[in-house]
Image (tube, rainbow, N blue to C red):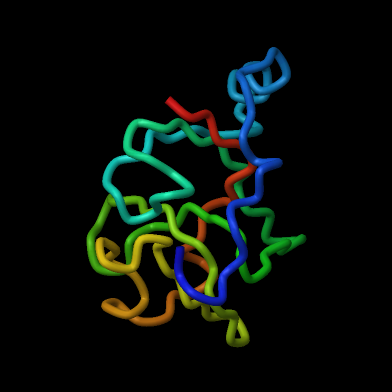
Length: 125
């Protein structure tokens, strides 16, 4: 865990339920499978996350939130990171496993328009 960031929000960890399945089917939420170790201990390779797409009319992002974003340097690649800092409409993203994370320390702050959604549930494998 990166120093100074909150511990994993245990309310994000869930067992699959009908509501989650329904919101995935109708497109209200999206899902991703975790690849890599940059977010360990919070997220482990193979975990499944669901996320709400970002609503441009209601930006509800805070330091400590886990988000899904487009990689700023690699087309068509998504990243899952934690918000480490917010500076106007730019975000400092960090992986919880700082020794194994490609994040804002490498690619710099990212613009709001690269953030796709906010993780709302984690299903551990």
